[in-house]
Length: 403
Image (cartoon, rainbow, N blue to C red):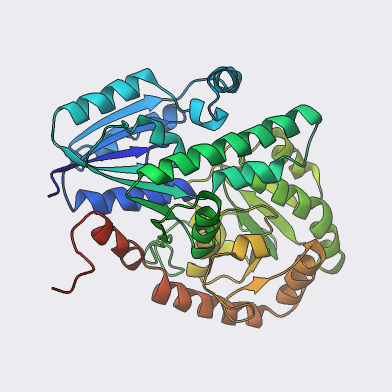
């Protein structure tokens, strides 16, 4: 019988302004409809800490801690303990003490753990129900990095991929269920770990919020037509690599046919490498914005040219919900149930992406049509309520037995 839930997340699920926080935000809200929830989580910065009070009135208790451990310290701890560096980055004695106290109180019957880094806090002797949302196969991401960069970073990423894969497997064997964001990620994870209770629980989209007819500020002053937009967290390596590649290689091809075209890179915490892209002709780097819908609504085309991507890209679904034509790489489109040429365009390389952008800019009517089809598709298949229906069964509210 469910009593109370312990919810652990590597980032505070407020505000829901980036992919992982959007997912954790909606999962937490659904869990709070089931039972009292105690939340243990980290804030990346003072801005995030300011949202801790947003959970008051929704959750039974909370512990929000500012994550300040430098990466070099996490690296040393990882090497000394044999643990993944990414796990040591989120290691905190105070959070462990808080978790232990909640469990010792005897009220916690279920633990929902969001992101593998937080699984370290689940006691080995916990006898309640333990649901682990890995979201993506993080170890595979580090393995993909191991072939790039200088020799030290290749070694670090190769080690991280190997050690993290072992950690993921150990946690999956303990958990009552392991969740991944798509069927493709779930199959990959099951093949790598051999775990028997692996399943997909997809991301959803709030189509009432991401609505082209909704209430939000319009872009002012308007950018010169045409406008190409990329959205995302701009200190995340796959996003950095994607916009760098597009700005350096696709934009010259596009501007050869559409000299006034602007590529807007929209997202918080741009690295120096991303900020420097604003020196290129036709490239604008915005940094954090008040409302991403303002930029999505103003765009003629949305691009998601990621070469490395794990799971489902919320940025693609958000743009589709805003009735915009989306051009995605195969990696960015993986896991999204949508048809090329009907709901979005999936292009194999930078040259094909540039050619597709040019074609859409030359025929705006085709972009409008596919954008409308995209929105209807997202409304029909990607509402949060339907995506999270699996939670009821996993938390024991319903069973597979019709009797």
